[in-house]
Length: 207
Image (cartoon, rainbow, N blue to C red; front, side):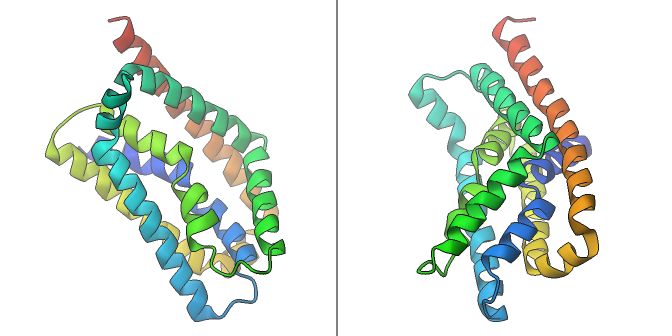
Protein backbone atom coordinates (compact mmCIF):
# COMPACT_ATOMS: atom_id res chain seq x y z
CA UNK A 1 0.00 0.00 0.00
CA UNK A 2 2.94 2.32 0.56
CA UNK A 3 4.00 1.76 -3.03
CA UNK A 4 0.47 2.53 -4.21
CA UNK A 5 0.37 5.72 -2.12
CA UNK A 6 3.70 6.94 -3.47
CA UNK A 7 2.75 6.08 -7.05
CA UNK A 8 -0.61 7.86 -6.72
CA UNK A 9 1.04 10.83 -5.03
CA UNK A 10 3.56 11.24 -7.84
CA UNK A 11 0.89 10.80 -10.52
CA UNK A 12 -1.43 13.43 -9.02
CA UNK A 13 1.45 15.81 -8.37
CA UNK A 14 2.63 15.60 -11.97
CA UNK A 15 -0.82 15.85 -13.55
CA UNK A 16 -2.38 18.51 -11.29
CA UNK A 17 0.98 20.32 -11.13
CA UNK A 18 0.59 22.61 -8.07
CA UNK A 19 3.78 24.62 -8.86
CA UNK A 20 2.53 25.19 -12.40
CA UNK A 21 -0.93 26.31 -11.27
CA UNK A 22 0.47 28.79 -8.76
CA UNK A 23 1.75 31.43 -11.22
CA UNK A 24 -1.42 31.17 -13.30
CA UNK A 25 -3.55 31.74 -10.21
CA UNK A 26 -1.35 34.68 -9.24
CA UNK A 27 -2.03 36.26 -12.63
CA UNK A 28 -5.77 35.61 -12.46
CA UNK A 29 -6.14 37.13 -8.99
CA UNK A 30 -3.77 40.07 -9.42
CA UNK A 31 -5.13 43.07 -7.50
CA UNK A 32 -7.82 41.07 -5.68
CA UNK A 33 -8.17 41.41 -1.87
CA UNK A 34 -6.24 38.79 0.10
CA UNK A 35 -9.43 37.42 1.67
CA UNK A 36 -10.95 36.99 -1.80
CA UNK A 37 -7.82 35.20 -3.01
CA UNK A 38 -7.99 32.76 -0.07
CA UNK A 39 -11.70 32.10 -0.57
CA UNK A 40 -11.30 31.41 -4.30
CA UNK A 41 -8.35 29.09 -3.68
CA UNK A 42 -10.33 27.06 -1.15
CA UNK A 43 -13.38 26.90 -3.39
CA UNK A 44 -11.34 25.84 -6.43
CA UNK A 45 -9.64 23.00 -4.52
CA UNK A 46 -12.91 21.78 -2.96
CA UNK A 47 -14.79 21.75 -6.25
CA UNK A 48 -11.94 20.03 -8.07
CA UNK A 49 -11.67 17.47 -5.26
CA UNK A 50 -15.39 16.75 -5.43
CA UNK A 51 -15.25 16.20 -9.17
CA UNK A 52 -12.28 13.84 -8.92
CA UNK A 53 -13.82 11.86 -6.06
CA UNK A 54 -17.00 11.33 -8.09
CA UNK A 55 -14.98 9.98 -11.00
CA UNK A 56 -12.90 7.85 -8.62
CA UNK A 57 -15.96 6.20 -7.09
CA UNK A 58 -18.31 6.03 -10.07
CA UNK A 59 -16.04 6.35 -13.09
CA UNK A 60 -15.96 2.63 -13.77
CA UNK A 61 -19.76 2.45 -13.62
CA UNK A 62 -19.90 5.25 -16.17
CA UNK A 63 -17.54 3.31 -18.44
CA UNK A 64 -19.65 0.16 -18.16
CA UNK A 65 -22.79 2.12 -19.00
CA UNK A 66 -21.05 3.40 -22.14
CA UNK A 67 -19.74 -0.05 -23.08
CA UNK A 68 -16.09 0.90 -22.62
CA UNK A 69 -13.68 -1.68 -21.17
CA UNK A 70 -11.21 -0.77 -18.44
CA UNK A 71 -8.33 -1.93 -20.62
CA UNK A 72 -9.50 0.31 -23.45
CA UNK A 73 -9.70 3.23 -21.03
CA UNK A 74 -6.22 2.46 -19.71
CA UNK A 75 -4.80 2.62 -23.23
CA UNK A 76 -6.71 5.79 -24.18
CA UNK A 77 -5.93 7.46 -20.86
CA UNK A 78 -2.26 6.52 -21.09
CA UNK A 79 -1.99 7.98 -24.57
CA UNK A 80 -3.68 11.18 -23.43
CA UNK A 81 -1.36 11.48 -20.43
CA UNK A 82 1.61 10.90 -22.71
CA UNK A 83 0.50 13.79 -24.94
CA UNK A 84 0.23 15.99 -21.85
CA UNK A 85 3.75 14.90 -20.90
CA UNK A 86 5.04 15.93 -24.32
CA UNK A 87 3.42 19.34 -23.89
CA UNK A 88 5.09 19.72 -20.50
CA UNK A 89 8.51 18.76 -21.87
CA UNK A 90 8.21 21.27 -24.70
CA UNK A 91 6.45 23.86 -22.47
CA UNK A 92 3.31 23.96 -24.62
CA UNK A 93 1.09 23.13 -21.65
CA UNK A 94 2.40 26.10 -19.67
CA UNK A 95 1.88 28.40 -22.64
CA UNK A 96 -1.72 27.20 -23.08
CA UNK A 97 -2.47 27.80 -19.41
CA UNK A 98 -0.97 31.28 -19.60
CA UNK A 99 -3.02 32.10 -22.70
CA UNK A 100 -6.17 30.97 -20.90
CA UNK A 101 -5.25 33.10 -17.90
CA UNK A 102 -4.71 36.16 -20.10
CA UNK A 103 -8.17 35.72 -21.62
CA UNK A 104 -9.71 35.56 -18.17
CA UNK A 105 -7.81 38.66 -17.05
CA UNK A 106 -8.98 40.52 -20.14
CA UNK A 107 -12.62 39.77 -19.25
CA UNK A 108 -13.10 42.48 -16.62
CA UNK A 109 -16.62 41.31 -15.75
CA UNK A 110 -15.32 37.98 -14.44
CA UNK A 111 -14.18 38.28 -10.82
CA UNK A 112 -14.49 34.73 -9.45
CA UNK A 113 -12.08 32.34 -11.17
CA UNK A 114 -12.44 29.53 -8.63
CA UNK A 115 -14.77 27.34 -10.70
CA UNK A 116 -13.53 28.25 -14.17
CA UNK A 117 -10.76 28.03 -15.08
CA UNK A 118 -9.15 26.93 -11.78
CA UNK A 119 -11.32 24.01 -10.62
CA UNK A 120 -12.13 23.05 -14.21
CA UNK A 121 -10.11 22.49 -16.30
CA UNK A 122 -6.83 23.39 -14.56
CA UNK A 123 -7.13 21.19 -11.46
CA UNK A 124 -9.81 18.65 -12.37
CA UNK A 125 -9.01 18.47 -16.06
CA UNK A 126 -8.99 15.52 -18.47
CA UNK A 127 -5.54 14.44 -17.31
CA UNK A 128 -6.37 14.27 -13.58
CA UNK A 129 -9.75 12.63 -14.24
CA UNK A 130 -8.11 10.00 -16.44
CA UNK A 131 -5.36 9.47 -13.87
CA UNK A 132 -7.66 8.81 -10.92
CA UNK A 133 -9.84 6.47 -12.97
CA UNK A 134 -6.80 4.57 -14.19
CA UNK A 135 -5.44 4.22 -10.66
CA UNK A 136 -8.81 3.01 -9.38
CA UNK A 137 -9.12 0.51 -12.21
CA UNK A 138 -5.90 -1.30 -11.30
CA UNK A 139 -7.46 -3.04 -8.30
CA UNK A 140 -10.40 -3.20 -5.90
CA UNK A 141 -10.95 -2.95 -2.17
CA UNK A 142 -11.84 -0.24 0.31
CA UNK A 143 -8.26 0.00 1.59
CA UNK A 144 -6.92 0.61 -1.91
CA UNK A 145 -9.58 3.25 -2.54
CA UNK A 146 -8.75 5.06 0.70
CA UNK A 147 -5.04 5.06 -0.12
CA UNK A 148 -5.64 6.64 -3.54
CA UNK A 149 -8.05 9.22 -2.11
CA UNK A 150 -5.53 10.01 0.66
CA UNK A 151 -2.88 10.69 -1.98
CA UNK A 152 -5.35 12.91 -3.85
CA UNK A 153 -6.18 14.77 -0.64
CA UNK A 154 -2.50 15.37 0.08
CA UNK A 155 -1.89 16.83 -3.37
CA UNK A 156 -5.02 18.99 -3.21
CA UNK A 157 -3.87 20.33 0.17
CA UNK A 158 -0.47 21.09 -1.34
CA UNK A 159 -2.21 22.78 -4.27
CA UNK A 160 -4.22 24.97 -1.90
CA UNK A 161 -1.08 26.22 -0.15
CA UNK A 162 0.66 26.66 -3.53
CA UNK A 163 -2.17 28.89 -4.70
CA UNK A 164 -2.04 30.94 -1.50
CA UNK A 165 1.71 31.34 -1.82
CA UNK A 166 1.65 31.89 -5.58
CA UNK A 167 3.24 35.33 -5.47
CA UNK A 168 6.14 34.46 -3.12
CA UNK A 169 6.74 31.16 -4.96
CA UNK A 170 7.17 32.96 -8.28
CA UNK A 171 9.59 35.44 -6.75
CA UNK A 172 11.69 32.62 -5.26
CA UNK A 173 11.66 30.16 -8.18
CA UNK A 174 11.76 32.42 -11.18
CA UNK A 175 10.75 31.49 -14.73
CA UNK A 176 13.87 29.45 -15.55
CA UNK A 177 13.65 27.15 -12.53
CA UNK A 178 9.94 26.61 -13.15
CA UNK A 179 10.70 25.60 -16.75
CA UNK A 180 13.28 23.03 -15.62
CA UNK A 181 10.90 21.52 -13.04
CA UNK A 182 8.10 21.33 -15.59
CA UNK A 183 10.30 19.43 -18.05
CA UNK A 184 11.44 16.95 -15.39
CA UNK A 185 7.84 16.31 -14.34
CA UNK A 186 6.91 15.83 -17.98
CA UNK A 187 9.49 13.06 -18.41
CA UNK A 188 8.21 11.32 -15.28
CA UNK A 189 4.61 11.58 -16.46
CA UNK A 190 5.58 10.10 -19.84
CA UNK A 191 6.98 7.02 -18.09
CA UNK A 192 3.83 6.63 -16.00
CA UNK A 193 1.66 7.03 -19.10
CA UNK A 194 3.64 4.36 -20.94
CA UNK A 195 3.06 1.98 -18.02
CA UNK A 196 -0.70 2.61 -18.23
CA UNK A 197 -0.66 1.73 -21.95
CA UNK A 198 1.41 -1.42 -21.29
CA UNK A 199 -1.04 -2.54 -18.59
CA UNK A 200 -3.96 -1.93 -20.94
CA UNK A 201 -2.39 -3.88 -23.77
CA UNK A 202 -1.58 -6.79 -21.44
CA UNK A 203 -5.17 -6.92 -20.23
CA UNK A 204 -6.70 -6.54 -23.68
CA UNK A 205 -4.60 -9.27 -25.29
CA UNK A 206 -4.22 -11.47 -22.17
CA UNK A 207 -0.44 -11.16 -22.25
